[in-house]
Image (cartoon, rainbow, N blue to C red; front, side, top):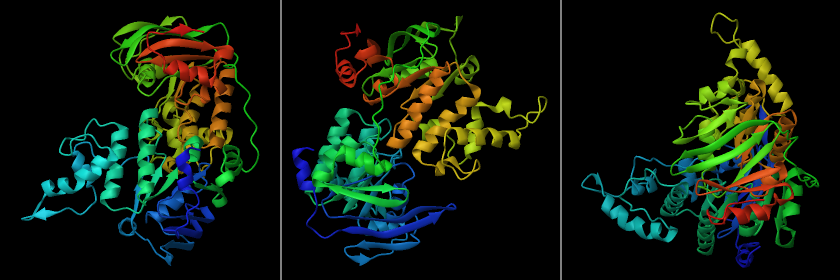
Length: 517
């Protein structure tokens, strides 16, 4: 833990907000069984737990989106019924979710002022006066885009700064941040951490919700752990260690994963890629993927990994290059053509690109298997019985925690949503499965289950390509890792050289230093 963490330790001040024995049931299940936590002014308090542990439910209660069945919420020591988002705002709470509140067609200033009262003059919104008030706050947070410029095209990191600025304009006493670094680069993360420490020093409390335990340990002086709808531990000081957090999250000691060796790789090449290019993101990419292999692609954010996956999947068209799939020329012009040829993709943004959140689990699983669930071969009508049967099998085989195949997939935890996206490919059995950030935003238990599933698919002969920003993940899964820098594959690591340190070192090397190991 860094030197600043001590100032964020156990707070001497009375809590700003406390949840006491809060319980909540909805959707036929008990989401909270009596959780408790307290947050003091200026404290950075961590909240961790497996997907489905109850973190999101408590946040919804604090945000006024739902009411608890029992227990109390205390604000400044007084029992308070929040009841609505407006009331939560009035109490001094602001919430920044993974899906950021952001309208690209508006200006930066208009985005900052979303949902906030605005100064008016002669019956018109006085944007000049508002800009004078907002400008010093935006500057403090680090917003560099001009306030009156359109917000279209801003990065995720810049959108985060806009959301933080909105919270400070609102004079928030508590800012809840849900998985804030999920889409940020390493340098952007460090900038966000500096802002959080500045907020803490100025008396603003932060509830930091993340699956990234290194960040929790670095930033937080106290951490509350939820498991199965209960608060099972509050760790601080010498107790606050990674092993203690992991043990509290999963409910027991965790065995360390043995190093994987990329599945049961065979000599047969399933996919051969030569000179694939789409400037400026992908430049002359060449590699072979073997049957039964788990091949990793590493690199920093913006290195071109996801863009390469889109070329392989036909979501984008290449400028140059060739591909051969099982000995035949392969160059899909659409994702549908890629699926017909035998490729599957689990995209990085599962909620926006991989799922229809309002539709059922069964509907989402069946999206790539429509030909197998037709009522008959003549009429294009779906058999609900066949669709439910396939969904039941996938739910059972992947241990997806869902009330039924008819439950909206948007109501599942992040890890279970990811299993649904992966599960849809189990029925169609693609020759090549591409997984882009397969464990992003999922808890440590779901991560292990997804890793086991990937190994099982490779063991059955599927060729698997895994893209990951986490250098600890690829050594667990892959016998070979390709490292990309600025659109180029600059290094290949294999065997005993596939280590965390080697991946990090290669990712920060110059693009001109390509070396195979």
